[in-house]
Length: 448
Image 1 (tube, one colour):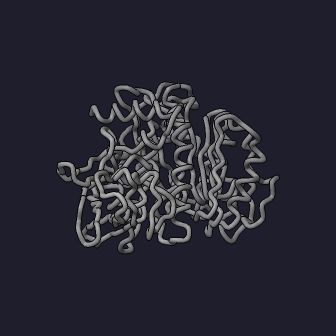
Image 2 (image 1 turned 120 degrees about the vertical axis):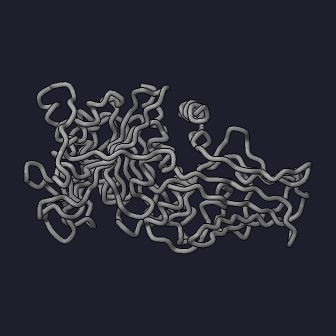
Image 3 (image 1 turned 180 degrees about the vertical axis):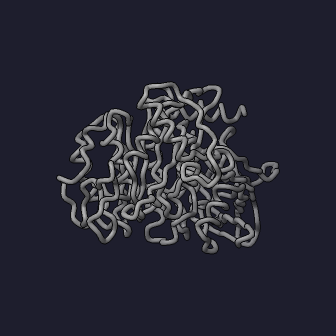
């Protein structure tokens, strides 16, 4: 596991430099053997997964002045994905994809991973997308053509982060036991076996551990699951774990009482989840963060302010910054002791008095919005109200992405939810900016 230790040390060092390069994570690539001819070059120790930040990538040894067509191709049992861009070779004979402006491409700005995230192929179900990009190794081949002649090729094996980080199931009884132990101030105790099929034996959360020899005690992130494509916990949790944080995912839907059936959470469940995390010997209880995207952002921000003495910071994007009522009703989406918390019935009207008191959050806050969000049309207005409520704080980051669409919390580099060419490039750049900000906070927290 030497490579994992190397990447972790590099990533921690990147907090004071460029987060993006250090977080081009595991995987491998296979260069074509070439003696002096055109070939693709990446720096040593830079490895790749399906989650990609812009990293150095060059085509060297090409004929100056020639126009080359670079293509990316990936074939799986579901079909074939392709992308391409044309470049003019400069006098140096080297095309640096990080700085060279592409022509006839689905992206306009220089981007060393543009050929990866711009791949287009068959439409997949959400489960098939997760299996392809997060739970398998995909082989993406870059080819360089001078007219009809193939002059260079390289195969990149991209490992899905789900191959590296796998969750363990946490039951309702586990959370109940943690809450009871916290109330009695007793050491954590083992839960007694439960009969199969009992409500308490059912799944209540998923836990991803980031514990390692170098980091026996880690920060943690409580994730409220957004089940939309590309933003679900199968994408988000493994990436947060790669930043050195353990992750506990709790669903924000499917509550048992008749009133709390869609996109609802219970304060007792959230409190028990925090108890469960705080009482683990591999988690730093003073460094527990919350994360929510899209409709789940409100739950993360509600938790950060309701349990402000236990939360070290908050991350979210694409959602409201006030608590919304359940769709089409005045019923709250958060319940405490069976009583619904005050909520906003009209998400289209931003009332600053309803915004969460984010000034109470003791640690950094990273929030984002997309200018062309079609899921929540006024997402950036909600973000502006949150920023006003928060005030100016060191370590905060408010990411507004001009021209981007809703799914900016999808991890960078993935060709997921980028079908609209008018917004795809801006959305991808928004993903890089948002996740760089999240990474910077968590990587600092791993050193505290």
